[in-house]
Image (cartoon, rainbow, N blue to C red):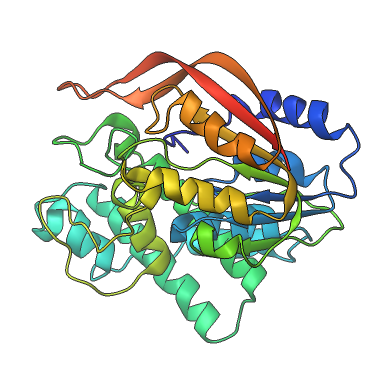
Amino acid sequence: MNYIGSKLKLSSWIEDEVKKQVGNDLSNKVFCDMFAGTGIIGRTFKKNVKKIISNDLEHYSFVLNKNYIENHKDIKDKLKYIDELNNLHLIDNGFIYQNYCMGSGSNRQYFSDKNGKKIDTIRTKIKEWYDKNDIDDNLYYFLLASLLESADKVANTASVYGAFLKHIKKPASKELVLEPAYFIKNKNSHKVHNKDSNELIKEIKGDILYLDPPYNHRQYSANYHILNTITQYDNFIPKGVTGLREYNRSLYCQKREVHNSFEELIKNAKFEYIFLSYNNEGLMSKSDVKNIMEKYGKYSLVQKEYQRFKADKTENRNHKATKTFEYLHILQK
């Protein structure tokens, strides 16, 4: 998925830096990915550690990580279900089509009419199977994660869902094909949460805590609201031109709140090693973070220059490469 702040390109660097501090053998370590997003870092460490604890306040993230992190054993006949979902007769009265496709009269164009109907059709069938206990949690989240990522590939947006495009772009004109969201299989069990980070930190403990909170005022709930709507598939009245739902407002996106929230998180963390990813465009400065973290143990910092992609706010809304610095703040409590 095209995802704001994705650590896909930085995952190998982060893994190397963690091993420099903690050691190459992580097989007896509990690793927590507290602001998990699409779960890239959790997936990176899943194969190496004893247990992953994954968390994010966004429901779409919870769904993705229930599949990619918590699922770790083979799921029988999973591709049979994928095939069946791809070949259902389309319904035309579903929530996504009625509210986020132009043909319904909604005046919103997040998906082509056919793809909107297909999302509704697949989501409705997954819910039906789950409600009837025809599928278990493991298969449910595998299918739902597969739908989420497949729908994102044909979304008519400039990578985020804060707005839709006036005309259907080429990738969005292609028919949605449900593709399986394969996960890493191993013998270890893992746990995924959908909680406020500052509350969850009081309930868990481990060895390595990785933090990747929002950097700025951008609220993920607003930018990815359609993904939450697909996963929750509840009834509400979409608001405004973009069809927003009620959404979470993270304290890490608020200048007046972020410092206190961050210090509370660090103070309450029952982990020996803490790694914070943050960049040079964040609400907290490099010195702000240092001043907070060094109160609680041995502090150090490494950084890396890289190019990240963001949606261009020009009329064409193309992707532009932007150079930025990623800081990895390190604390040994």
